[in-house]
Length: 215
Image (cartoon, rainbow, N blue to C red; front, side, top):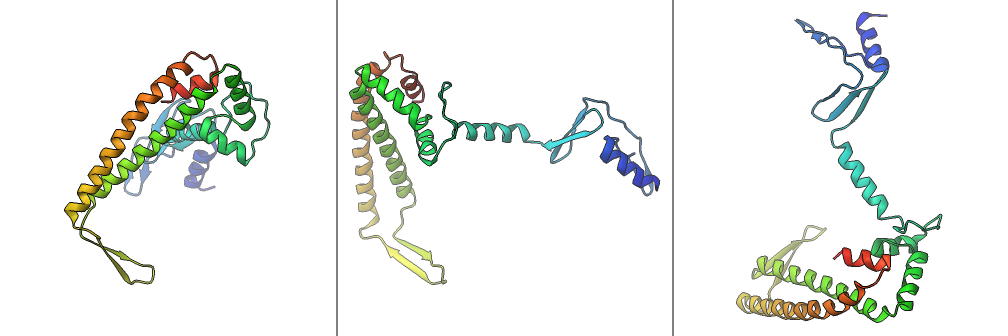
């Protein structure tokens, strides 16, 4: 076998580094030891026993992301006995962290504790607060993007023009008033939710504890 091809084979099979030489240049050959780690622009390498491990430089970050996504698709109840999660389970897990069976059990315990009314109102208010905050952000962005005329290019290449039904100053004033209304509603919701939250904090129900901690 030609010497260069043998060096390539040794590099691939054994992890030996090819001598740093090319036409018109001779460099110093370096042999890696087991445990050595080095990087190039895109990859991270580690010399193992008999081979080189190669991973992306952001491998750990991507692994953390994969682990997080996996956790969001599995029931968070450490005592869950369900072997397979169906579409409904996955939907409920994404919303609550628990499968249908475990959530039902937790909610039965909540009713037995006499906390169902506070639990139901707390969840309803949390959802209302999230919707209101999102609406406020959209209106605020709408004010920033406000202009008298808008043009949209359609798929067929034609241009569709839209004109505000009212003068910009008037539209902006109405949008700012709507933001104020949302702020007033949010203040009331945040005051009301405190009462129910203080009651729920007295519970030892693990599901309730998780909900409160996710605020």
